[in-house]
Image (cartoon, rainbow, N blue to C red; front, side, top):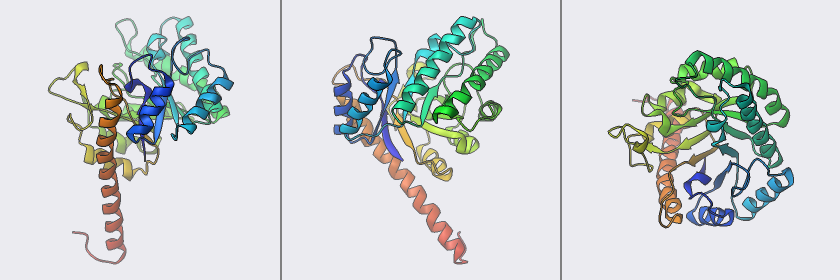
Length: 295
């Protein structure tokens, strides 16, 4: 697994050069960049494919990998909106992300599938979101980039079984899950989600969550909350996940580069848990193959 960090871990407006430098200096393997509104730093809706390739070159020159793109724009233009014009804006955001990812030779993008609200009922959200993703899936396949449906606090897809049904309902190998470990903890167990989603998981976000707080301010740094990290890393190994696990945390107000260094050390501990899980699984397999009891 690659040790990654999302651009959101740095304050808005941070120059891309600083983002890449701080990320590399902290010891990360990969960076996940965000697609934002025109005029924002880095990739945005007006970025040309040539500009995207130049940004990819800068990432490579910095000694980093990049596998995926994310965006917050689908909160503003949800694929489940009642207004067709808004849904079309959302689909255009996804198309742009797919095109940028293809130009940069990435394999996945993050998509928030929809929002259940007082105006948009759950069943309406499901139908519109599913229809939108099914419409976009052939374009994703054409460009060779997977759409990763993220589990977020959108009052939607609240169980792993429902997430499985939604993804499978898209009927495309280019639609999977962008699994966020910390987002699950308020209403479930991330290790169970990982086991149930299995190889549908295309990318992973990590952050921690304090259940005693129980609201949006409960999100916290890795190892500072209630996530059962040994179990999470074990299940990621069980499904043979080998991609990036990207930290997605709130930026520090002061000395923003410090968050990258703190998080890199925490992720080293997570990855060591994963290595221990792999070693234990291998040892058990050897014992079993030799005919010795495993207890």
